[in-house]
Length: 477
Image (tube, rainbow, N blue to C red):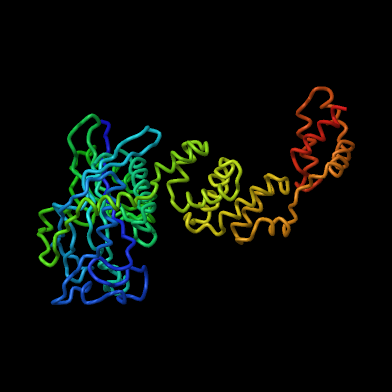
């Protein structure tokens, strides 16, 4: 029997506010343990939370950018499930009246275009961090992260493969970056994915028993966890067993998928309206103002690159998926003043290669866009060859030095003097009479050998276009 995988994602994003959701403590990442805390986020007796206005604004902005309806009336609820990493032992979240609902996103891949529904986006507080000591079995807790504001973006179960889930998650990340709602630094836990997954016989309309995989913090882990869990469930069913509804943990280092606990339902959390927080009431003017402030989103920018600059759709899609990369690209195009496709070729080729090799995100490019624009101009004016430019680029990535300085230091200036090149080419022809004779007998491929010998003679510094021109003239005489 063939099986179909059904996937829904819950994406948690820490908001880019300066202070926590219910108090004035900093949201800065790191810091000495338990130093970003106060009586409110530590849940001391007698304290009262006050909702951070910016949290509501960012959540509404995320909702509008993902085609959600915005609830004019929403409220905050207590989620009464024991949280050892929250000092109150419960979480303040939203249940039946979230800020945003009924949105969608379009994703594109080899399968074409597909719409993924978004059930809801709600606000809540993040939990602290448990620190386990493997030696003595003790557990300590750092409450610095407790109370940092989150939005949870809950999708419909519309995805059918790990690839679709990855594309959807990447789209959400880029939208949150473009809107400034979250910095999305996955290595710091700012963006985390929970997967709800079930399998069913192909062609069936019913849903199988789902499992949840918690706290995935990379696209690689997301894909690996989905593929592993899908295969595990199929194996269970084919062996005559039943899939159990549970929460599981994926370890991307070991490739292990283990059970954590039975999966809770909404009634297990015993939600009720938080009595210390007033409802959130939004008027049309407030929502319209945020809508007007929305920036150019990834899809719109991608279309602009295609329509105005003639980029292929694929190039435009890859570049605009990351706001730092798109910003770098645009600045380089404006500084360069030449064909935007030439810039795209370098960004998609050498730059992406180096970022992947070094494991660096686009916001960590070690030189300004003006450096790449300067390098392209050096190629255009014949100062260096294309191959020499790649060497300069690699060195520029390592040192951050300006391309002109590197060309000088590495001695890579291109020879474009016709008189000098003519003398070199004549020497090469004298050393290789057989190739000259072959060319004049009709074996035009021999010219490629002679070009190569000329480049070797000049240690790669000869202007290739000029070499071809002069060599052809001499051979045809």
